[in-house]
Image 1 (cartoon, rainbow, N blue to C red):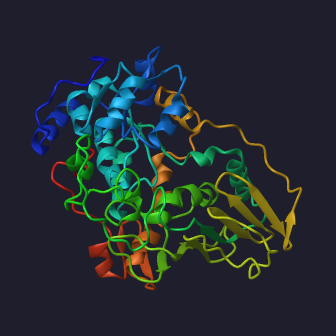
Image 2 (cartoon, one colour; image 1 turned 90 degrees about the vertical axis):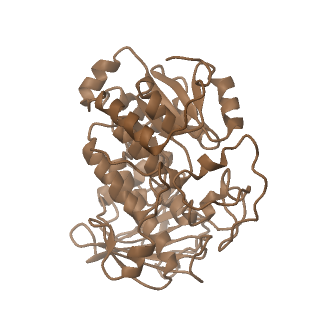
Image 3 (cartoon, rainbow, N blue to C red; image 1 turned 30 degrees about the horizontal axis):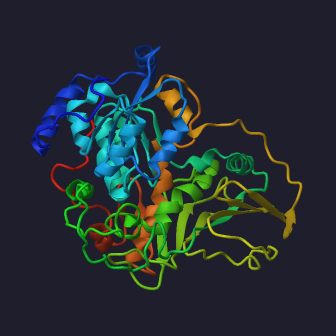
Length: 459
């Protein structure tokens, strides 16, 4: 590690200079096997470059606190106020405002990257890290655009030895792990259908009112690099507290609304338990199409191939936001007071209801079962297990990117389909295209990236 303060001023990072420098660095960093990485890092520390240091980022640092082989080498944030705070906590780490400078000039000073930034930045940053052979911890939802699922999938194929982890830390809670095991062993019989619902969509810490326009522009704080905040966006957005630091989730260009924000915390159960294939179709009902702002009162029906381990020829997922729950009476269940953020799996012999934080309720024959046997599960550490594996351990990880992009897929489909309320879109995940809707292929599959911030090719 070098300087204990911010690096000396660098020349501007242009697309040409960054790609040229990045190519040189990449050529000098051969793709190491896991064992080779373990040998290289033996008796040393995992050096982490953390991009986005405020808000939820503190959770990652807390999760890795006191890990004997973890060292935060550098930090990046477009808000100098956040960098000033982190300097006090990590005085020996370097700081910068443009993440591309770290890969262009300091790639030999870190081994792994943690990405805690708004959704629209994820894919360019993750693929840049893959290109430079860096392990990655990436926030959920893994990507923001449907075509970015393909990009990540191809990047992983080119870098099979990288250790990755998506930020759905709730998966390691005991109750959630027990629920996975119960469903895997068909303790309640084969799955029939699933119902999942998130919370309300209204103004608060993370959201503004649904269907909102951007708030009128306010003066940009001098400590905030508003240009770099835009990253890959081609349109200049009006600065306000309704975009940064947290409410970007509410807007089409920058986030994914409640459905994408909570999807990976709630839909993962189905993927861990049943190894679901790519969805075949999505239909989202909502009051009116999304525009600049995301919608609310969304009821999305997502269809998967069934048969075999499923009770029906199609496995259907009903995914809602705005705390819209299924009818318990229609499902033959007793009246039950349930809050937001739950996953319900209806099976042949009973129903499992799982709260986001791991509380399990089991129904059999229309009644709550008080003494349903719960399987034993091994404790997992979401953050430290990832770090250990980066250094050569072979601990099981709940959500490497290989399954993280798959968990993200149905959530994104539900969100993107709000542009066409009541229209069923037939999806081909292998080609990242809709087979029955050319307009949707043109409008909701991908985005145009600002030059200099495109996701790089990983080869």
